[in-house]
Image 1 (cartoon, rainbow, N blue to C red):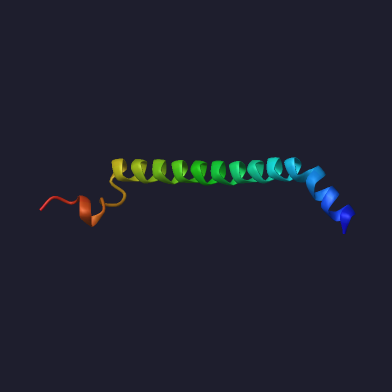
Image 2 (image 1 turned 90 degrees about the vertical axis):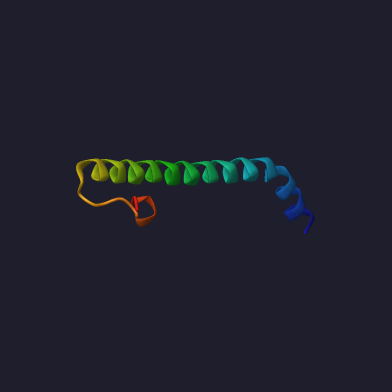
Length: 59
């Protein structure tokens, strides 16, 4: 049991570092995909392939 606690305390900074890195990778991937999706939507709207959302239509 003591060995488990000692190893946990010893490798805790590495665990936190890797957890933060994985979180940053996931957040970066989500942001990149969102930018690509938004860019495609803007391009398609500019080309007139599909109309704007209902909330953006003028009355």
